[in-house]
Amino acid sequence: MKTKRNLWLIILMTIFAFYIDLPNKFRISGNLGRFSFDQEIQKPAIDFEIGGKRIKKEFKIVQGLDLQGGVHLVFEAQMDQVAAEDKDQALEAAKKNIERRIDFFGVSEPVIQVAKAGESHRIVVELAGIKEIDQAIDLIGRTAQLEFWEQNPKVNLEEIPATGSSEPIFLKTGLTGKDLKKSQVSFDNNTGQPVVALEFSQEGAEKFAEITTKNIGRIVAIYLDGTPVSTPKVEEAITEGKAIIRGSFDLNEAKSLSVQLNAGALPVPIKIIEQKNIGATLGAESVKKSLQAGLVGLLLVILFMGLYYGKLGILADLALIIYGLVTLALYKIIPVTLTLPGLAGFLLTVGMAVDSNILIFERIKEEKRTGKPLPVAMELGFGRAWDSIRDANVCTLIIAFILFNPFDWTFLNVSGMVRGFALTLTLGTLLSLFTGIFVTKTLVKIFYRT
Image: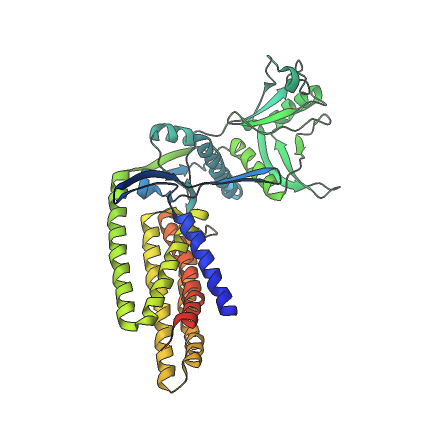
């Protein structure tokens, strides 16, 4: 009963994966006797509303820099005027600032990483599909501009939605990022909620005292590169050069706001030291050859399994096809930014999925040779092969973890290409364990008879 339930689960999972794998738009054409047809089919996108939030998802393969072309940039952060204890925070602030600017530029799936080696502090940026390269470099390379704006006394914010306003809502105060010494996350002594603490220079403290004194009860907005990042209301005049921004944000949001403010406060100009333009034509040709090689290899594996193991091999081939469908669907759902090394990771895990089946089938054959009945031989074969399969895959996952470097350790790799390989290798390894043990075992139990 349990085995049949598992089979239905596999069937439903395969149908769902096949639906996700279908192109969002494709054409069907052909002839049936005197009838001909040519129809373009649009796959319905997932689009629904739940809890007042609209969820819309179009499943597609996200291509990386080497597949669709783009630009690879390396920036050097100038840390000459930054204290040693503030360098890490300054580098992270510069990274956050670049992320925000790239989001504004509209680049999908950018790769932005920091790299530190000795006194060198670098930011690596990979922009797939970008065409206006000079504009992107200019946008990224500017030093962040932090400004404080005060509410226009001629404007009533409560009346704007109904009447509109021809007057500007906020006016510049002359208080900028060079007047802010630093910002950091703190906690309210009364509520325990995270807040953002600001500390101004001596000149900035005098400016801020004057601004808050005349704007009690009104908003003093904080702008970064012309975009408001916070709009706190002044509750009282602040004369000691320190201020607190309170809001309904959690700890992560408070940290993000603090980093954004520091991006405009810390003197961290960046200069470009490396630029590589990657053409999409090279990527398309490489993908074509990779897919051809992968297809030939997959067909040879399927042929070998069918000829050598007979019925068991055919069931293993079926499990391998299910593995491919589920893997591709997972790439679209996450989504995984697919690169050439990522494709290599996928093809490698195809062989690993077959390795698991070979270990299991050889173990079943050994148990049968000792005279055990088939049901017992199958249970022992799967159970005793598991130790070898587990150890081999755990070693692979450890290597993938090191290559992916999720904690951005500076003594390890930070390349987006290598991380793409590590990600597909990890997903493929986990899925090969699932299909090699769960799917193959279910299919063998139901369909295999000597």
